[in-house]
Image 1 (cartoon, helix red, strand yellow):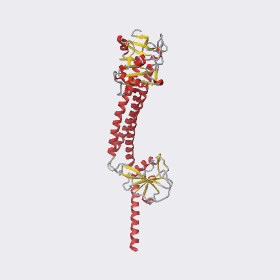
Image 2 (cartoon, rainbow, N blue to C red):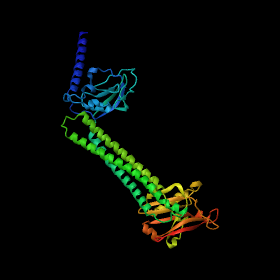
Image 3 (cartoon, helix red, strand yellow):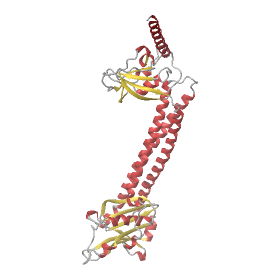
Image 4 (cartoon, rainbow, N blue to C red):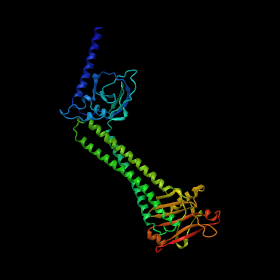
Length: 433
């Protein structure tokens, strides 16, 4: 019995000595960083001895000059802040946060088996995180994977890839915007005073500009995300310079945490840039519609006819009402464009969205088409007609527009309920008139 009592007393002394040594180590200015990651492991009532804990509020600013202010004590508590403090203490394997604010480092924790409620108190510095409860501690383990360099390299690679992808998307959207404005500026047919047909034809520039503005808005958002990546990379570079100046073994938890946050900020900015790039892609795809698809209507000329006196070099613009939401612009191949729009038009055969024809324009790599309804047919004689404006080759060359044509379904022209249709030339547009 005397021997057992002696062993127990000796063990108790050793625990007290170890706890005292741990706390004494924390009272010195911290040197070195021993952990590079942490994870949440439990929500428990920790009944481990207070003597073996190292509290942030007591030791975070140890080593500072007398009378100096401690910035760390002004920060709201978060798991990351607690980790940055505890990662400097080699003897610690875990850290806990209780009451939403009190951080402590510990070599171990001892969970009480039952009771104590939940960890539902938001952290003072981040209300999205939970930092213990009235009786329980949020507990975290700390580990060292020697992955800081790898994470930094990965963040830089992600930033480079995201920037390149977003830049390409921004350039594409900006090109659509510029070319849409150029086509709008070039479109001068001098027919706006002719009502109602001239008004329809003169509304095309606004359609192109509006769609170009959509592309430009997406490009601007992408540009912001690219700049954010560059800004975060610059901030990371400054932190790297700070770290490079630290002597071996004197890295602080605060600086290590600053570096981790800078890496995380670069990664977050890269993700945002990728999302912006995808958003630009979606916008461009929506604006392009059939013009952005690889699917075309092979031999579409068997089902569509180009209106106007094409044999004499005239090009037609049909003055029919466009189908709402069925006007498109895209950077596309000139020859592929009509076949792509024909495929879309051919598929719309019922209701108010029934397509009977489409206008097509092409200039400097930008294709545009508008799908048309039969609203706007005229009746110059016994039979109805499709009103068109004929544009000369010389006029198109003067405006630097490569193609202007109206393609109508042959079935529509030949089998209309009111009899076969023909094209009625409202006006011929040349360089002189």
